[in-house]
Image (tube, rainbow, N blue to C red; front, side, top):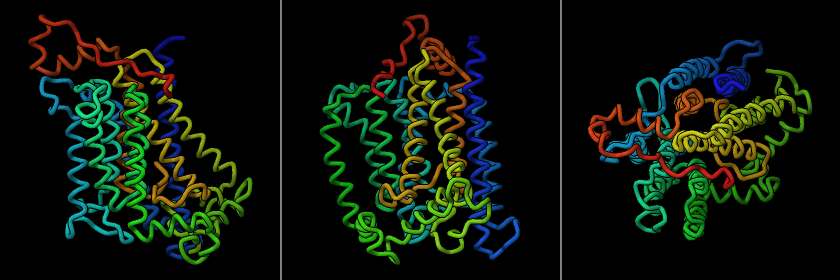
Length: 411
């Protein structure tokens, strides 16, 4: 098989899956929002139109980012603090900090998670998710420190991720847990020592339990998950109404726009529980189609991981695929009452402006990885040509390897 056709096929699958999910999100957000204005006919609502405009911007962002070579993110200059990956995680940590300051961050539903930015608002935790993936992909493949050492290597790697998670968990437990889970998967593939993870995971679980028990509403969610019917008008209300959406949707669904649960019965029907609206209106077929589109994105990421190419591109693809897969899985699990409510959106589908654009930008990086296939030596050559500091040393040292190959068996 021709290699160029092989690569084109995978990036086409990725583009089709992203476009389909974004368009599905536009339809379902519009459908779920129709009850807010009391409109019976299919007419654009304010929320639906706003989401459609952000969807257009997001798709443009996806293709624009995808057209640029991802190699600058693999920057390996003399001073590692010039790396875009380190700057990205630093900016993410800074925005996660300032959003907690009263008067700067904006509260929505009692949680201060938003930063005003012109006519829109930005959620720093969305930026932190993808900054963490980019940082780990760069750090685990370049290994500026010895990861075999616990304190000076492994813990130094976890320090920026841990700081970001601690800043986020104060107001957004679900996103902090998502970043932690994605970090664990990337560390496992990055061949860190298992006993290092075994040492830090129990304290991390204890800290997470404290944050759950410390907030009364989080603890009520946990107890309601055990028996939603014990509080049918309280914390169990979301879960019960979500289950009713699945029950009434059946195999073929009620039809697009004909759902009943969205008429004031199902809270957060355009965000956290939009999958329940999909199942009620489009039925089992709509649910399976949604899952298949996410599996298509994960499939493309997995194919990149299996290629013989630079380790940074493979690790970046693995991280992006893991983040999308984990977030979609958790959201669907919440909608089906398989796990307690977390407040995580369904990626590319749920209503959201900045989050949708940032997610499409991250998937644009994955598109770039499928488009530009570099060997370790080629990527070194590209990076060194862009770096005057290292270009002077090309005649005195051999090309460096990007890092250890990713172990696909650890997947």
